[in-house]
Length: 158
Image (cartoon, rainbow, N blue to C red; front, side, top):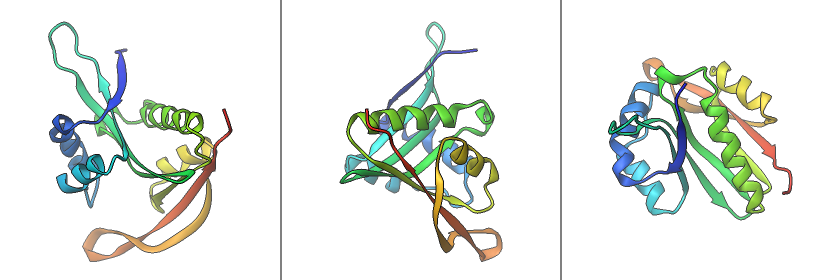
Protein backbone atom coordinates (compact mmCIF):
# COMPACT_ATOMS: atom_id res chain seq x y z
CA UNK A 1 0.00 0.00 0.00
CA UNK A 2 1.08 3.59 -0.46
CA UNK A 3 0.22 6.97 1.02
CA UNK A 4 -2.06 9.37 -0.83
CA UNK A 5 -3.14 12.95 -0.34
CA UNK A 6 -6.00 14.93 -1.87
CA UNK A 7 -4.62 18.34 -2.84
CA UNK A 8 -5.97 21.40 -4.63
CA UNK A 9 -5.35 21.11 -8.37
CA UNK A 10 -2.86 23.62 -9.76
CA UNK A 11 -1.75 24.55 -13.27
CA UNK A 12 1.43 22.49 -12.72
CA UNK A 13 -0.78 19.36 -12.39
CA UNK A 14 -2.46 19.74 -15.77
CA UNK A 15 0.02 17.68 -17.84
CA UNK A 16 -0.54 14.62 -15.63
CA UNK A 17 -4.28 15.29 -15.41
CA UNK A 18 -4.59 15.58 -19.20
CA UNK A 19 -2.66 12.34 -19.74
CA UNK A 20 -5.08 10.48 -17.45
CA UNK A 21 -8.07 12.23 -19.05
CA UNK A 22 -7.02 11.16 -22.57
CA UNK A 23 -6.50 7.55 -21.48
CA UNK A 24 -9.84 7.47 -19.71
CA UNK A 25 -12.49 9.15 -21.86
CA UNK A 26 -13.89 8.91 -25.37
CA UNK A 27 -14.39 12.69 -25.38
CA UNK A 28 -11.70 13.98 -23.00
CA UNK A 29 -11.69 17.46 -21.55
CA UNK A 30 -9.22 19.90 -23.07
CA UNK A 31 -6.55 21.86 -21.26
CA UNK A 32 -8.80 24.89 -21.80
CA UNK A 33 -11.66 23.27 -19.90
CA UNK A 34 -9.39 22.43 -16.97
CA UNK A 35 -7.79 25.90 -17.01
CA UNK A 36 -11.20 27.59 -17.19
CA UNK A 37 -12.38 25.51 -14.22
CA UNK A 38 -9.36 26.59 -12.18
CA UNK A 39 -9.79 30.23 -13.22
CA UNK A 40 -13.50 30.15 -12.30
CA UNK A 41 -12.70 28.97 -8.78
CA UNK A 42 -14.39 25.59 -9.12
CA UNK A 43 -13.45 22.95 -6.59
CA UNK A 44 -10.58 21.13 -8.31
CA UNK A 45 -8.54 18.45 -6.55
CA UNK A 46 -5.94 15.86 -7.44
CA UNK A 47 -5.37 12.59 -5.63
CA UNK A 48 -1.61 12.20 -5.31
CA UNK A 49 0.32 9.02 -4.65
CA UNK A 50 3.15 10.29 -2.47
CA UNK A 51 6.61 9.57 -3.82
CA UNK A 52 9.13 7.72 -1.71
CA UNK A 53 12.34 9.52 -0.76
CA UNK A 54 13.06 11.97 -3.57
CA UNK A 55 10.60 10.50 -6.08
CA UNK A 56 7.96 12.97 -7.27
CA UNK A 57 4.33 12.59 -6.25
CA UNK A 58 2.13 11.00 -8.93
CA UNK A 59 -1.41 12.07 -9.81
CA UNK A 60 -3.70 9.03 -9.77
CA UNK A 61 -7.08 10.78 -9.86
CA UNK A 62 -8.87 14.11 -9.82
CA UNK A 63 -12.21 15.82 -9.61
CA UNK A 64 -13.83 19.12 -10.59
CA UNK A 65 -17.00 20.38 -8.90
CA UNK A 66 -18.91 23.56 -9.68
CA UNK A 67 -20.47 25.30 -6.67
CA UNK A 68 -23.77 27.10 -7.16
CA UNK A 69 -25.83 28.53 -4.29
CA UNK A 70 -26.43 25.53 -2.01
CA UNK A 71 -25.55 22.75 -4.45
CA UNK A 72 -22.52 21.32 -6.23
CA UNK A 73 -22.31 19.80 -9.69
CA UNK A 74 -19.69 17.09 -10.14
CA UNK A 75 -18.31 17.91 -13.57
CA UNK A 76 -15.47 15.40 -13.75
CA UNK A 77 -14.14 12.62 -11.54
CA UNK A 78 -11.52 10.35 -13.01
CA UNK A 79 -9.10 7.77 -11.67
CA UNK A 80 -6.08 6.62 -13.67
CA UNK A 81 -6.96 3.29 -15.35
CA UNK A 82 -4.02 1.63 -13.54
CA UNK A 83 -5.58 2.49 -10.16
CA UNK A 84 -9.27 1.74 -10.77
CA UNK A 85 -11.33 -0.67 -8.69
CA UNK A 86 -9.30 0.18 -5.58
CA UNK A 87 -11.78 2.60 -3.96
CA UNK A 88 -10.07 5.84 -5.00
CA UNK A 89 -13.11 7.44 -6.67
CA UNK A 90 -15.17 6.70 -3.57
CA UNK A 91 -12.46 8.26 -1.39
CA UNK A 92 -12.32 11.42 -3.53
CA UNK A 93 -16.10 11.79 -3.60
CA UNK A 94 -16.43 11.10 0.13
CA UNK A 95 -13.96 13.85 1.01
CA UNK A 96 -15.72 16.28 -1.35
CA UNK A 97 -19.10 15.46 0.19
CA UNK A 98 -17.72 16.02 3.71
CA UNK A 99 -16.31 19.40 2.69
CA UNK A 100 -19.58 20.32 0.99
CA UNK A 101 -21.60 19.45 4.12
CA UNK A 102 -19.28 21.53 6.29
CA UNK A 103 -19.83 24.48 3.94
CA UNK A 104 -23.64 24.02 4.07
CA UNK A 105 -24.14 22.69 0.55
CA UNK A 106 -27.32 20.62 0.42
CA UNK A 107 -27.03 18.53 -2.75
CA UNK A 108 -24.51 17.14 -5.21
CA UNK A 109 -25.61 16.56 -8.81
CA UNK A 110 -23.80 14.63 -11.52
CA UNK A 111 -24.25 13.15 -14.97
CA UNK A 112 -22.99 9.68 -15.86
CA UNK A 113 -23.03 7.71 -19.09
CA UNK A 114 -25.94 5.27 -19.10
CA UNK A 115 -23.47 2.52 -20.09
CA UNK A 116 -21.02 3.21 -17.23
CA UNK A 117 -22.32 0.54 -14.88
CA UNK A 118 -19.28 0.65 -12.57
CA UNK A 119 -19.76 4.38 -11.91
CA UNK A 120 -23.55 4.04 -11.57
CA UNK A 121 -23.05 1.24 -9.03
CA UNK A 122 -20.59 3.39 -7.05
CA UNK A 123 -22.91 6.39 -7.04
CA UNK A 124 -25.89 4.29 -5.94
CA UNK A 125 -23.78 2.68 -3.20
CA UNK A 126 -22.91 6.19 -1.98
CA UNK A 127 -26.57 7.25 -1.84
CA UNK A 128 -27.08 8.96 -5.21
CA UNK A 129 -30.44 8.52 -6.91
CA UNK A 130 -31.40 9.04 -10.53
CA UNK A 131 -33.44 12.23 -10.86
CA UNK A 132 -33.40 12.70 -14.62
CA UNK A 133 -32.17 11.64 -18.04
CA UNK A 134 -30.38 13.70 -20.68
CA UNK A 135 -31.01 12.16 -24.09
CA UNK A 136 -28.02 11.95 -26.46
CA UNK A 137 -25.85 13.89 -23.99
CA UNK A 138 -22.45 12.25 -24.53
CA UNK A 139 -20.56 11.59 -27.78
CA UNK A 140 -20.27 7.87 -28.46
CA UNK A 141 -18.47 5.65 -30.95
CA UNK A 142 -18.98 6.25 -34.69
CA UNK A 143 -20.58 9.67 -34.25
CA UNK A 144 -23.51 8.31 -32.24
CA UNK A 145 -24.71 9.85 -28.96
CA UNK A 146 -25.31 8.28 -25.56
CA UNK A 147 -27.79 9.21 -22.84
CA UNK A 148 -26.69 10.51 -19.45
CA UNK A 149 -28.35 9.66 -16.17
CA UNK A 150 -28.70 12.70 -13.92
CA UNK A 151 -28.10 11.67 -10.32
CA UNK A 152 -28.37 13.59 -7.06
CA UNK A 153 -27.53 13.09 -3.42
CA UNK A 154 -28.95 15.02 -0.48
CA UNK A 155 -26.12 15.83 1.90
CA UNK A 156 -26.60 15.56 5.64
CA UNK A 157 -26.04 18.69 7.68
CA UNK A 158 -22.89 18.74 9.73
